Image (cartoon, rainbow, N blue to C red; front, side, top):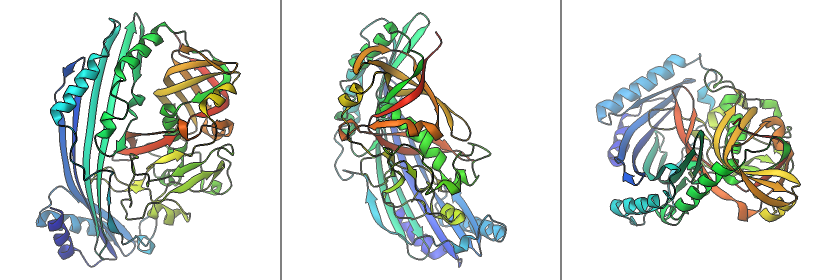
Length: 478
């Protein structure tokens, strides 16, 4: 199919300043065992193409699932018509933006390896793990699942650019829910955050198998635990919660199209403004945040973004100082500021826009036991369960599944319903210690939403444990 589309595009490309075609061929499968019962398998196939045209300063695009000659011809005609209609009326002169002529190939790790497990073997493993969860009558719900996606993307430009990227995504999950009276507690495998690129070794050797009994015991432990204390204290966040903290209070505020006002109507704006870059102290000097689509196993790794810009690791925050936004080539040209290769689309029927990819906190030098030892009074929290943040991505309130008290440098008992709140503009400046590489975990999410029409995209976050001071911590009202 890719060969035929390549030949058609070369023949049909119009005489314009720029024309590209992005073809997506994606299939997915979800296998779930709930309460020891295999659920109906969920499979999907998604295939189509987006044509983009820039001409005389205008910009237009059109998508089609009809990949015949007539279907592509019509999409090209529509994209060209939109480009001509927008010429002289757009927010910028798009003809002045030099989009790359990229060539090359990219593959997820171990893509060429044969499948290690049959579907039946996967089901057997999920059923065996599910069976370990129901160890008490108070366990009222539990499920184990595996979601896999194969996604192949071909990007062509009329002037000879050609990029083929082949991705394989693996997302194992397990969750256990316990109930006693009006109290319900859930423990999950990374909060659905174990999302990686690669082969099925992520499922077989990634920690899910063998975790069912432990998560069930922790859910029961939470039923008996006291409510999280309320007060201003130290907060030690583990990677399963740090990924949400990074995502909401660094990732979204730094998206350049949001800063330019493009998202104001739907998902809000940002407290960050263009004049802050290069000057604003976003966090303490311990905060180093990288945009890194080059880490092979991470969920949103790639070699070129969806406008053909080459991906590389770049710091967006270094030693606490805000350096650059998460903006692709078009937003960079509009804003007159350097960004990153962050132009990404959720599928063939959506245009690329500024999105997080892998947004990571670089590890520090502290061992976890030393971080705990430094705390006089605080709470350790892991695994996000709830989140709320205002429309400028500044004031937030987050809740976690599991908490542990820290008193006089020692881990104490479990607490339930741990929550904390803060303001992005000051929270990161209270970062007082960053864990070393032994505390770092690579995680991600398939469900980052943005834009009108809606785009739900895959994002990666790697982080060590991080310790914050003077945080407003509280328990749920019970």
